[in-house]
Every structure is written in C-alpha cells, then in structure tokens.
Amino acid sequence: MLLTRLASSTVRRLFIMASKPNPHLLHQGAALQIPPKKARTMSRTSESSSSSSSSFKEAFGNYADYLNNLNEKRERVVKASRDITMNSKKVIFQVHRISKYNRDEVLDKAEKDLAAVTKQYMLKLVKELQGTDFWKLRRAYSPGVQEYVEAATFCKFCRTGTLLHLDEINATLLPLSEPSVEPLQINVLDYLLGLADLTGELMRLAIGRISDGELEYAKKICQFVRDIYRELTLIVPYIDDGSDMKIKIDTMLQSVVKIENGI
Image 1 (tube, rainbow, N blue to C red):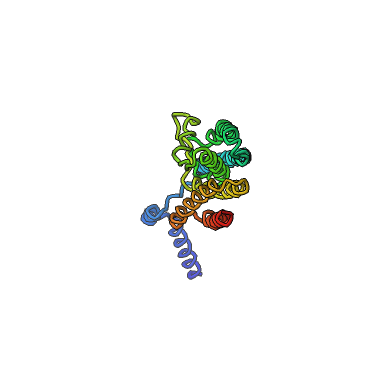
Image 2 (image 1 turned 135 degrees about the vertical axis):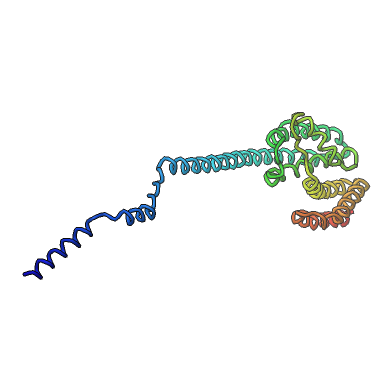
C-alpha cells in the first residue's frame, strides 16, 4: 500500500515538472525560430510579365510592318520594271526600222519614245526607290533597268556611232529625284549587263545593213561589238555576281561571229 502511494506521488510530481514551461528552452526555441517567407505578390509578377509581353509584341509588330511595307514596295517595283522593259523594247523595235533613207526620222521618233519612258516609267521607279536602300530590291528592278540601258545605248550608237556612258545615263535620272533625298542611280553591273544585251541588237542591225548593201556601216558595227566584247571579257573575272554576265559573254561571242560571217 505504501509502495503504491509512493509510486503515485512520484508520477504526479514528474507530470507537474513536465507540464511547467522551461524559460531556458523557450529562449532557445525563439532563437532558432525561422521567420516565415514572404509570399510573392501577384501584382508584381503580373506587372513584370505584362511589361515583357508588351515589349515583345511591339518589337515583332514593328518587324511585321517593315516586312509588309517592303513586300508591297517590291510588288510596285516589279510592276514598274515590267513597264520599263516593255516600253524600252518598243524603242528598240523603232530603231530597227532605220535605213539610209529614213535615219533621222526613225531616230527622232525613237529618242522621243525613250524620253517618254524616262519621264513616265523610270520616274515611277525613282519615286519608289529614292532615299532608300534600293540595293535590297535590285533583283526586282534590274531587268527593267538593263532593258532601259540597252535602248538608250542603242539610240546613242545609231545617232553618233559612240557609246553612251553610265554617268550620262545617270545624269538624265537626277532631275527625277527630289533634291533632299539620295537619288536612284543605275549601278555598274546593270549598266554592263545592258551593254551585253546591246551587242545582240547591234548584230541584228548589222545583218540588216548587210542585206541592204550598207557593208561599211556593218563593218563599223562589227568593230564596235568586238570592242565591247573584248572589254567585258577582261572585267568579268572581277565581278562578284558574274553568273549572268558569263552567260551573256557566250552570247556576245556568237553575235560577233555572225556579223563577221555576214561581212
């Protein structure tokens, strides 16, 4: 009985001691307590995400507008180039009507038509490309410019027997541009490609003159074509984009041979 009371008393005393708070242990717990993390606010996250998304949309929107405008300009330039090609061919056809009886009349009409091509169709091209990086669209307008060079140099040779130089052609284009912007100028490669095509027209002209008995005039044409061929063969290796020129060089040689065989 006595043992039972002692055991019961001991259990109560241990229970009371365990239930009393220990200031020392509480102090250690407070020192080791980790402050709670601050929750990331939705407003700050959403603002950052919204700002980043807006800047991307604005940047790509600008890129899209630039490409759309460039594609629309390219379409207009291609159309202008086609108009120049078609009307320059008409000038060339007019020159081929030349004979020793109507030379001045035919050339007057051809030069008048060429001036109309310059003022009407080349003007459209100049307005589209002046003040811009027009080299980006060179492939779009190069065929028309080459045909224009061919027509202009054809008229010049038939009138004076001399070559129309690049700076002379570009001088006729300067008045078409606004003074405050960079003018469109025909580049050297397009000029040389136009000269290469000129030799084909001169070959046809020479054959026609031979059939009409104008042998001396045909010989003059032949020598002119030889000179162009010789000079172009010397510079072709230095042309970066010379694939078109290499093809035309072969055609030029055929033209020279045809004239020589006819003479």
